[in-house]
Amino acid sequence: MKAIVVSHPGGPEVLEYREVPTPTVKEGWTLMKVHGFGINHSEIFTRRGDSPSVHFPRILGIEAVGEVAETSAPSLFHQGQKIISIMGEMGRDFDGGYAEYALLPNTQIYPVTTNLSWEELAAVPETYQTAYGIVTALQLKKDDKVLIRAATSGVGQACLKLIKAIEPASFVTGTTRSDKKRHQLIDAGFDDALVANEVLPGDRKFDKIVELVGPATLRDSLKHVAPFGIVNMTGELGDKWTVDDFDPVYDVPNYAYLTGFQSGLTSTEELQEMIDLIEKNHIDVKPEKVFKLAETAKAHEYLEGQQSFGKVVVMNSEE
Image (cartoon, rainbow, N blue to C red):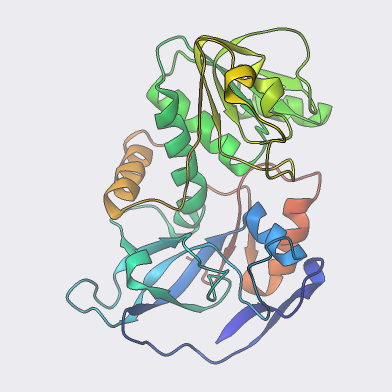
């Protein structure tokens, strides 16, 4: 089969497109025929060598969509069944989705029923499952004023679409570091957009804040949450992994709430519920940019560049 192999850490050029043996099914595992997968910032971090537990060579990819090619659990799965796999140690402890086939633990195989195209479905698993968890944690109310930091990211865009589907009256503001992208956010459906790096301009307060930049801006976001508001910190797009000397008693304002969402914890039922919501509300989940497997290095370059806006996927098929 063809796959993208990383033999040592580095830039996008270390993503080598080459032929490797197709995995053989073993007890407790299922072979997925991969139709497509999303590109995630965590995979860029791993490619750079910023994931100490990952040993090379490795086929990256923390998510994939496709169908069952062969399984050790015929009572659970059948050949040709439409499936999703995300997270766990996929693409880290064992080879992931950057390939034509992926051998995955049966516990990480999630059958789904959907009318979405393969290209649309490839944009959904990690991005929308994360966004769905974030938005659920926000406990949205009518007319909430919501802030999404790093709003141009795939998860930021997904959060906007889910928020508007669940509570259309919400007033959603997005942040970006680029003045040019500010106008793109408005065109994408945001009610307002702010240009901000680590500090938000002004002293506006928000009922709900989606913190996708992460530890680099969390303290600043907490200064802008309204009484009894909620801040959800799930992303780490600011390339910082921890909040130094964080004291929840002093750093979280009185009468405010701080929560998070671990996207690795999911179930078939939760994923199906999310997909049903997308289809019921006709949410446009088409990816912003689509690449072929052989172009995965270009996909990484694009996502790392200043021009990216939304979800980037790689497809094995033309479907």
